[in-house]
Image 1 (spheres, rainbow, N blue to C red):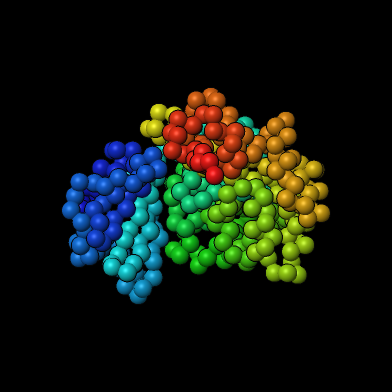
Image 2 (image 1 turned 120 degrees about the horizontal axis):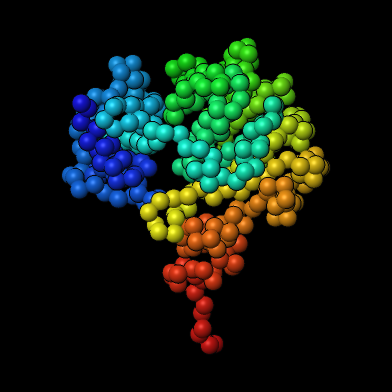
Length: 364
């Protein structure tokens, strides 16, 4: 058994989301959003290299030795499945290992609003799940694919870097492809997928203009495309896509979004009220005629006002979702205050006064 499994098993047993191994530091576990050290000595470079080499293929060892980072999945019966990033830093190597849940949660178990499922009834178009790194985008996408797999008879092709959750074909045929192992990149994978009779294509990350352009083409030509961006709101997501395109294609990108974007789910992970877990809180934009007009006329900055008043269409701003969860006593009010954009409406719920603005009472 690889010796690294001892740390992975401990991290999973304690409910950690990530395990970090780094030269010059003891192993760390991320529990409920915060890092905690395992009672162990600081790892030396030779020790950590030996630990990670036990789970690498010779090809991966050669690639990493050439100076490149490694992204891959590691699975073992004793510890389950992990997404791994192996990297080099100034004083040695490091590894970040994200624990993958053994069972794909349902949309309901994630606490996602019903409108997310309704988006999946579309036969074509683009659905985006966005958020900062580590906010559960991959889990949300896996749940969406799981719902499609149980309810639609589709050919679903996923392009991931690396493959995280493993799907077993049920009502749908699911083909999972890893960037680096099965295709050279997301754009190449999209180009190939269009020749493989897909109904649904999942793109792990829309990270460059070519991939974004190929995803647009797929959505325009009768496919349902699911993708992610590292943006933190619906407006920033639209801006990122438009700004990523060459100048001569920006107007075409706006037209595409106005006509073919189905919706944007922007999420954050916030500590639950008991502090023992984290819960996804989401901002949701549905591409209604009003939203479409704002995109076409370049008035994306006005979209938040539509989201704020668009409850009947399933829309909500992040602050609205946070405040509702605080009032239901689902999430920690202090953590909600930290994540909120307009913090004034959250001040009355804060329990830690150190978080609040300090008032200078000195008299001149």
